[in-house]
Structures are given as structure tokens and as C-alpha cells.
Length: 132
Image 1 (tube, rainbow, N blue to C red):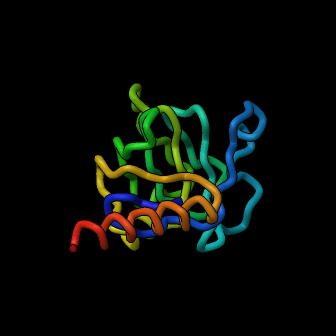
Image 2 (image 1 turned 30 degrees about the horizontal axis):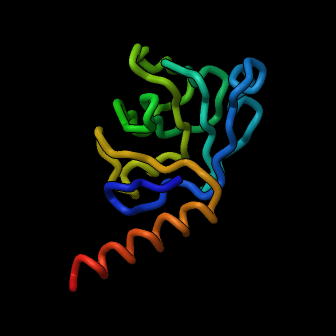
């Protein structure tokens, strides 16, 4: 997952939770979140951390993968707010938002690492052309 506006990575391995059962299970049963992992809940307008053992960062996205709401360090046994304009939610390790400098309005690229590499190469080519 790559933040286009900040040109920073949020996670390298994002698992989609795009069925009812995957969203229901979420991160329950995990002891911790690996630093480069993430969970993408599709669709979702809000989450809870009841039964979880660790804090997470939460990013609400609209249908175009633009950040519409952020929660840093959501502790266990909490309920996040519902955001009606949210199409999906990313659950990330705590401090991922801070480390990537992600802000409301940023556009995220959620895809395979090869696609991110192609995106970066295209933009480097555009920057080199613009500099001439």
C-alpha cells in the first residue's frame, strides 16, 4: 500500500477481507500485527477492537481510495465511529499513519508490489520530462 501524495509506504502485505466471514474474523486471534502487514475491510464503515490484544491504526477510505478519516492508536475494547461515506477501512500496525505522514485527502494505491514499482517508474519518467 502506497500513499501517492506523500510518496510513502504504509504496508507491504495487505490482506483483503472482502467476505462476511473474513470481515467478522478480522484480526481476532492474532497476538500481534507484523510491521508491514495490513487488513483491508471491504466494504466497511466502522470497526471495533473488542477481543483484540493490541492497538492499531485505522484509515477510512472512500470509493476512490482517498483518506476520509484517520484514527491513530485505537486501543483494544474500543468501537470506532461510523463514517457513512466510507467504502472500506484499512487496519494497520500502530504508528503506521505517523510513520507515513498520511493525512485526510491523501490517495492510496492498494495493489501488488509490482504495480507500485510500475507506478513509481512512470512518475519518475514524468518528473524527468518535466525537468527538461
